[in-house]
Length: 325
View 1 (cartoon, rainbow, N blue to C red):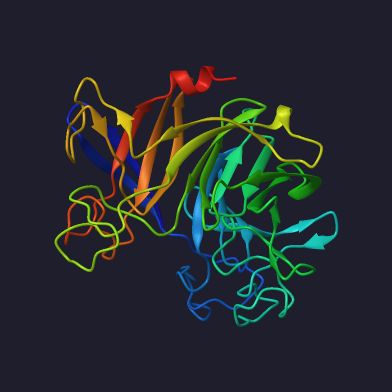
View 2: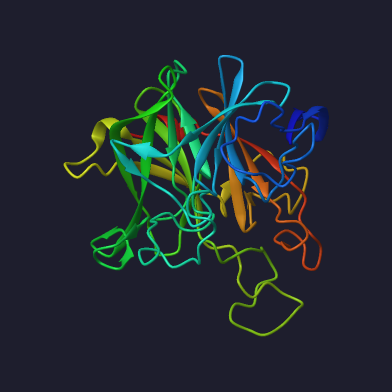
């Protein structure tokens, strides 16, 4: 389902305006779904793993992690089409792609390169809405080296280019180098034609104070939030191998909060987003963004020990990041 919500930053209240349930009554999906024999054919989490969304000419283009695929959906949630990931004749597929029939998760040995649930967690859109930039969450598997793709010991992932008019991928793509092994790309949005913002995070830490790293206890965070950042990247400064330049970053575990505006969590001079998965990023205007966490309900307790996290919306002034060159 897709929720349309409105945030009131003064009161801290978020209102749900409308919900659209995704369904495929016209049978546009090229494989059997869980609700195959129903009239409405509502989609489930066993059919797709929708993780990213862009509004294009009144349609919703949704990035999926399973295929990975791009779903075209109208504002009523009706599927209009499914775009497979084929770039310059090469197919990028995960073990759960319908042509792979849910293979075991052994990259390279089973004929696929996209890690399970490692598809399009992130997908940006050009300012003119003519181009989408789906981004793999995880590094792809290199069948020759029998390891994930990397350069100089640093794993990297890929950003693809999808032409909206033709609904086909172009031959262009870029590479994004992770700072540490195990990091993932959680979201991606464009600021202008060449620069964008990427959430890069680890996939193992959460929690903020009290901390007791490495200890076996339940009254403190044993793996406190470590690597949660928003990077500014620049396509125009890509190197000869296609790696985008990482210009600067914001550390989401150390956010300046001089006016004490936080409605939740310790409202201190340094505010933290200590969740396992900061995974949503929206551009508000040229100098402000909103970040949203995946609360992995009920398994994540990054804010308060022993209590499932809320979904938090955090409005940030990023003027310094925008101006970085």
